[in-house]
Each structure stands twice: as structure tokens, then as C-alpha cells.
View 1: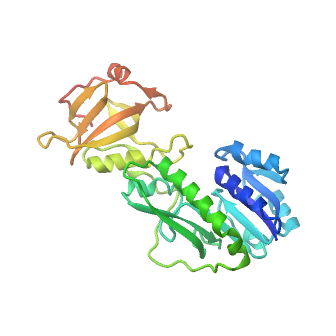
View 2: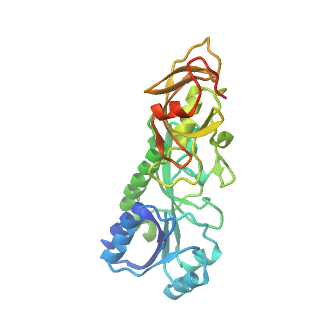
View 3: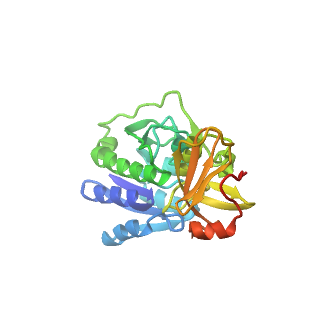
Length: 311
């Protein structure tokens, strides 16, 4: 069978290497996003090592890419960690179908930023899905899924990493069964949830101490994507009319007599602020250019002390 891959990063590289072990299928071409590609070295090394036909893309629907697909006439296309919406021209070019990896447990958590939303929403379980592509977004029939618990202190970056590893394991176990028809795709069923680019973090990521400490902590962890690129947004706090990025927090018991926003302690270990429920210990911060700020330097930038009220 003739196969084309549209993909990025480690998961595309690892899946590609798994495919190359099976000589009954031919990898005809690989499209990858030169600018957005996370961990480009992983995929580019694989492409070079196996001397594969490949081309960087900005938009998969550009005429030259459609021309390549039509010339190849692939049996299958695999979309692996490329988040461009595949329209009918791409779908129609594969005679047997298009298979997509999604880092969420469809039909729940369709859409984008799916490593962040489950953390922000306080979910305790998550999953990944390989599914067929139709003309909807993340609505195609499901081929295989796996599910797992979300760790209590996981960040979005940790969840993303686990999703990638789960996706690779699921692929290695099942990909030949998908394309042979040994595994039959099953329609998605309700309930479902979907997040678009228009869905932004609560309060645009700005922390409100009028909420609970567990909610603030979940927001910080859900927007913590380091070292991955983060176009979704960062958790931020406004102190002394200055905005700082909050990198790491911890929930503490707090003082029931204190008001939300009141500073409970401020020392070399960080800043503890009372919330509507519990207190949040802000352990590490950065400026808006993502440069870490030490607590001694932070003290020089702001004029607050224990007992003061922060916005």
C-alpha cells in the first residue's frame, strides 16, 4: 500500500520508523511544517536517515501539495501531530482513507489546546484517539483509543508528553490492523465536547484570588507547557500594577480570617496569598519575556509585604 504522512515532531518520527519496519507498505511522501514543527530534529533525522521523499509546508492545501498527492494517489494518509484542518481535496486524494491522531478521548475534548483544558477543568482521567478523518473536525469514526489517569500535579506539558507516548504505543500495536480492515472503525457517540481557537483561558489567564486556590493551581498547571511552544496563553498575576507570568504554584491551607488577595507570607521561598478558598503558594515566576525572576529581585520590583492586599 502507498502511504503519505502529514506530521510533526517525535510522534510522527516514531510512527514513521515503526512503519518502515514493514516492507509490504511504501512511504511515498512526508509533509511537515518547517516553522511549527516541534522537536524538528527528531523528524528531520528520520527523513534523512531513510532518504525519504519529503517537503516542508506552510498550508497543506497549497496547489503544489495537492499536485504531489494526486500524482502519488496514496491508499492511506496519516495525519500525525499536524493541526491543519484537512478539507475535501486532501481527504479525496487517499483512496482508502485518512487516519488522524488526536490527543484527547473523543468524542470528549475535540479541538485544540487539549493538553491544557483537562488540567484547567480539573479532570482526573484523559485519553488519546486514532480515528478516521471526515469533513468535520475530530468527528470521524474511532479506530483505537487508550485511557489513563491524570496525575495530581501534572502540567499541560506532562499531559502532552504522556499523550504522545500513549499515541505511539497505540499506533505500534494497531496500525496494520487499521489499514487492513481487521479493526473496524466505530462511530462517535454523545456526549461530546469541543474547544476551538476562540476558547481562551479563564480570565485570559489572569489569576483572580477571589477564586479557590485549587482553581488557581489548576490554571497555572494547565497553562504550563514549558519547554513546548505555548500559543495558548500563560497564567499571570498583577502585583503593584505589574504583570508577571506564574510558572509554578502549590495549594496551601490558608488563613480563614484573611481576605482574598491578602499576602500571608513573602520570603525567599515565594509568595503565599489567600484565596476565596485556601491559599496559593506562588513558587516561581517570570517576566513577560519568560525570563525567570528570583524572589530577591522580585522584592525590588514590587512594593508589597505581609498583610497587604493584592488585586
